[in-house]
Image (cartoon, rainbow, N blue to C red):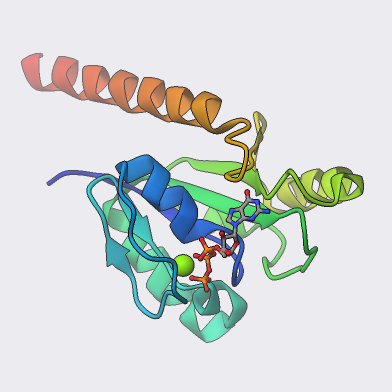
Length: 158
Ligand SMILES: Nc1nc2c(ncn2[C@@H]2O[C@H](COP(=O)(O)OP(=O)(O)OP(=O)(O)O)[C@@H](O)[C@H]2O)c(=O)[nH]1
Ligand SMILES: [Mg+2]
């Protein structure tokens, strides 16, 4: 089964905008109500991370993902993630600071939050209005997916 990149984050953090970029698609941006499987991604509703009763759906869905992107919205600091939340996932978790074109003074708070969540660096600072940082994130993901596939192919051949 094809593994996709799952995108998690608070309401309006830019999850669907980012999944559009990762899928080269242009789905209209309306509030995401359900988990949406795209060509390369799994988009999730902001309400799932804002409601602890919904964590189990995120964790179960991530079982089929290659990576989880945890988004922090730089424009609006909210503490929705519990400390150590990244450890709930069995696949690699990558920290992404979104809307980096807005409220630059919040960058350090975002970094501190990613650390509290238990995510290791590198963190990716992106803006989807001016495309800052997006290519670096795409390259990093592609590199990680290719390395993972090579390792799997080697294991199959042995
Ligand atoms: N300034 C700025 N706005 C952005 C950026 N990325 C997304 N947005 C805007 O933020 C709003 C919300 O974007 P979405 O991608 O729908 O956010 P979401 O996290 O999917 O939202 P929900 O599905 O409701 O949780 C839209 O108006 C986007 O155009 C960014 O990098 N900078
Ligand atoms: Mg959405």
